[in-house]
Image 1: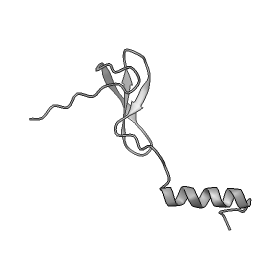
Image 2: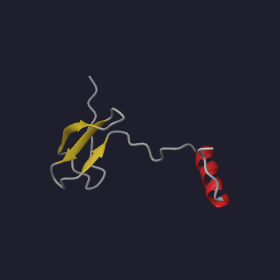
Image 3: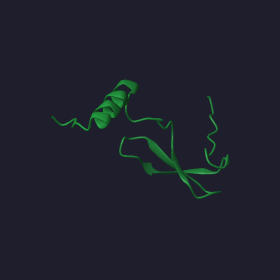
Image 4: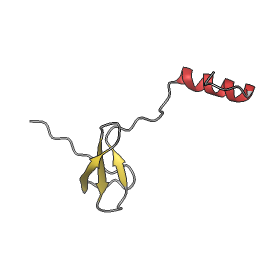
Length: 67
């Protein structure tokens, strides 16, 4: 059996408790040391690099992405 120790990304403490689920289904954890919440394996960006570039181009042109 493999045991993985999870640390708080904010303070580094190992004293984490499960605290529900995020809307995307990932487990939320709450640190008992610093009282902050985090998710397991958080994604750094919601959009792909290509989509972000498209959004920024549309913003610079002041056009709508809706049509």
